[in-house]
Length: 363
Image (cartoon, rainbow, N blue to C red; front, side, top):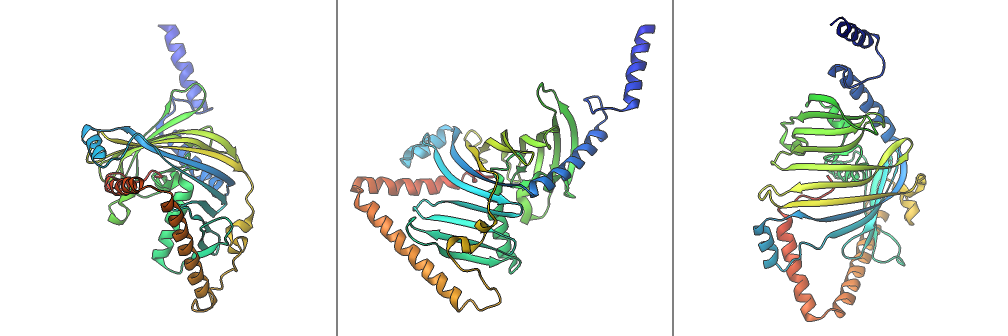
């Protein structure tokens, strides 16, 4: 009994003396460390500079008998995955996304410190045409669209920091953030922490941020990078994502792989699975790539009327794209048999009807 008292006294003395954080520490100490760490990491993420290639693959982890029957009626093969490839680049607050649309038109969307723009071209041997340019702050609606486009570009390569379309700091620093519990997770190779919380946003315009029974698992020893998260969204769907950290950029681990599971709200037995693979191509992106001159177009002068030079640029650009699309479709249709055209038409209608049941996979 005397020896037991000595052991207990020794443990109590160590706790009073302080030292590295352990699983026995009170929750408020770990909470304070977490809140401070998230704020510090956001500053690092805001200054990252790199270019990455992203491959998105969507398929179904499971399907109900009803959904299988629906697919069969529409002559659609649900076992065939949909794959999208694009590149994204970041230089602090500036970002861009480049890829190819389903109709074969390549595009670049970019945002710099002054304005946002989008350029397109039907083929690589044609010059870029301007399809959109807008000065920051010129319109609340336009700015919202620009912000949404930026989010879509950042959310996958920065999946170790973004959840449900927002950076971790957005939720943690929100007045609607309600911390329910925080504790260490047993792990042999990292200092993992599990945080459980709710984010009760009542504003219907922000319902996508309304989370209940939410949790994250993050690495306290590696800038609190996310390795797993999940929550029940406003419409009742239970999302779950797991991330594999990859290459470090300025000390922060960019995601190498992410798996996102999206159940059908009306048919929970049917679960959409989105796999993302991210490869860092370079850790230096020239500033010029975020401006129109890099794509052979003049810089905008927002003090002048758009009925002048820029109006003709837009009209000419739209005309080039229309001609390119018509040419591509004409070539493709020449090589298609009547049976192929009929099948493609059926698949297009079927995919559109089923898409209503599932949300996109970049959240």
